[in-house]
Image (cartoon, rainbow, N blue to C red; front, side, top):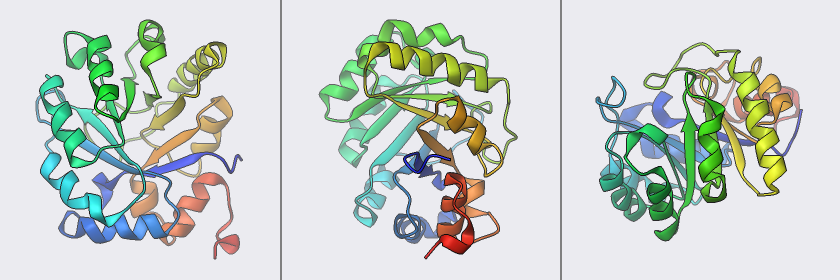
Length: 225
């Protein structure tokens, strides 16, 4: 198991009454990024948090804020999340009329830009915008809810995107989100993932946050300080 894989715990699975403490706790437990799922009850059938909450959480960690926008239309919200302190903003290709322009606006605002491939989306969606991507996320569940089971057919998509990234020679994070746990994480990494999003596996796993994060990297609990 690679020690270089980045772990981005999703606060969607945290206690919403104590999000600031949750962010501090996973930061101290070894998280590399803080994953924030933004849902609008339109693009997906759930409603979560907005830029005001992201801004309120920003002082609680210096780790990169990895903001996944499951919203449509997406463009008008990007400046708000930039202002709130997002370091990565990842969008769905079908969430706005001009994906290329959307990614340009994220980068122009000083954040790193990413796109998301849903389980039913073809891998070819990345090809026209690969040069504007700092991150590509493969959804291994259908977006909208935490706690879903891993869709194993997405491993082929991870491999296909890895081939494209390698061929481009660019430094692009290949992230997997959905059903990631100590059982599925090794398969994701073997397929080429370099970043893993995990909510339930971190916040509701059997061990401490540090042990749960380490388990995603393949580190036994006995080796966690």
